[in-house]
Length: 142
Length: 412
Image (cartoon, rainbow over all chains, first blue to last red; front, side, top):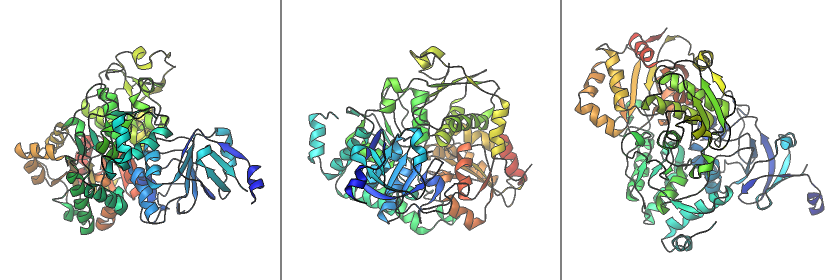
């Protein structure tokens, strides 16, 4: 994709962001997320049987989910995954809590949060996107 | 974000690389949330156990300790992943014990008081009204904000370490009076009995809200909760909904009245919670009946009166063969139970006391595999919620029913 194509791509504005720019394919869940409740931390694969991404791996994907749930485990777990090459490239969610932001900061994972609910339908599993935290934008590349 | 001279010096590295790392983390998080400054905290509760820190978190903490990092305010540790005296009885691997030991040694070297408790507010560091805190256990944060009127966000593991090293936190969220006002209203129309009912209430509201920034206010019918009932209610609300604060009108300090809870905003019409809603939570954790492998009183750690009541309820009877009854407490409660002879009464009845841990952080999936555990009974919705993801079939019951299930060895 050329720079011109990127300039003309659809952009989704977010309320807050941190981290470095990245590009990858979306892994989309309709549920909340907690690393302790939902993940096998040894593999980065969703292990909760009733999770809609059960059996999928976070590694190298840009993970879209509703928001964090539960406790503090995610704050350490993102870095633990990152150190072993199992972390997502980026995180996109409607809502955040401090634990998720603290974890993304420690792990150096891009996080964009607070997009308009009407934009959710544009975030389709498998779609290629670029995250631009400095501009608080999700850029749809497909 | 405005930094004062001392904070700018920390950022330049004048206080060493550990403090520099800490304040950089806090500035990035503070900027994300629009914080205008960093504020001092009275104490820190650090959530760090090897099950969630992993090797990378252990390496970070050991590096900070090697860099001569020191806490600047009284700082305590939350529950860890095993009882250092009894870990082998649960067939936990030596590697887990050794790594947890190293992690806690690093925390001690930095000056953390190694209490290993998630109920520090009931024993070692009770919070004060309007005191700013840097606490990292979600149930403890919900208790501090709601029951004591203190002020803390969820300071997750690394953030709580950073708060201890700087003595500061970014000022956003529940440090700001305007974020502490009630945003939703519930009315409980049924009497609630015991910690399991209150835990179910917290679970129901948490699942309904599912938003850290929302603050429910709850109108109660009849007497308010005991401290232990409130503890379980708030822990469940945090577990199911990521909630950090809840007002119980007439029972918590910032909600003497409905008007006080909502401030300048008119209260909305309440959503009613009756017996059907509470029973629905129990039905969500109905178990499968039949043989019981485990009866667990944990999440949060039991207080002294909770533990004594469970032992009293046993009435000298023995736990059934093939069933294990486990109570988790902190070291302070363990010492008092020993002094009172209650530990002996519990063990003579076939029960077990674990100290410094909480069952759900004790590698529960591994323990289940080692013992072929499946059927677990508990009065804690938080425990049931988490262990469902670790392959257990949890059943939520009252404390009395839990004890009876342990004695009978079956769930009726």
